[in-house]
Image (cartoon, rainbow, N blue to C red; front, side, top):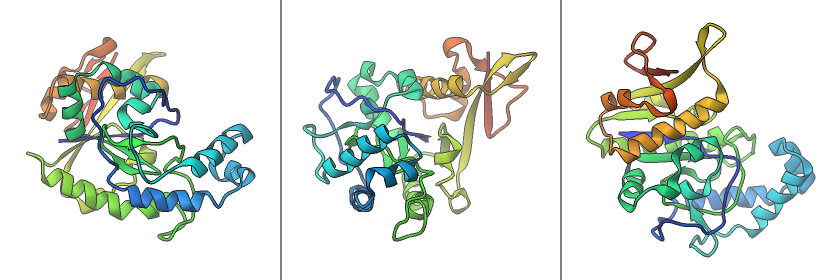
Length: 254
């Protein structure tokens, strides 16, 4: 079983670590190529490309200049500890044990516009590159054309090494759509989180992000490898709603 997550836009790179173990990103050469393309953009061009304000454009312009292909603990941080935001606050990776981090490294993959796919202990350097960015590259006009075949092949191989071919999709559509599921013979289960509001259950984005992190932590903390065990998730008032669920969509309501 493999879980996929989206990255976060914000990072916390200060060195407060609960482990010194790390791994090197699998697609470091591809990331290096993309950085070389990005450094061609001036701050004003970066502002238009990334659809960010001038301050963020300048920050990322400097990040691209400072980025190095060699990753170690002097210039990088483990991905699961570096990403910030609602999903990763839900995971609270800084509180995970060594055994739990090892389990996460085997079963969790973070999809990234720059790094492709990251294991939790893969080091990353400061960056911001969303999968939806229309960055022209040697494979096409956007990052989907750059990553789709490579990441589809990679995940297919990863899942073949597991006890079953099951993908738990906790990523946003922006990121999960980079995987061509028609080319992988797997079962995909998508947990959906809904809150009761105005007489009905609705998906509320900010709550969903945190819930995805809580679900990821639940899987990691309990060494879950059977999809059926996901139904026991009951963090922060959520519970499995059998009436709204299907074989491929597990709905949790509160």
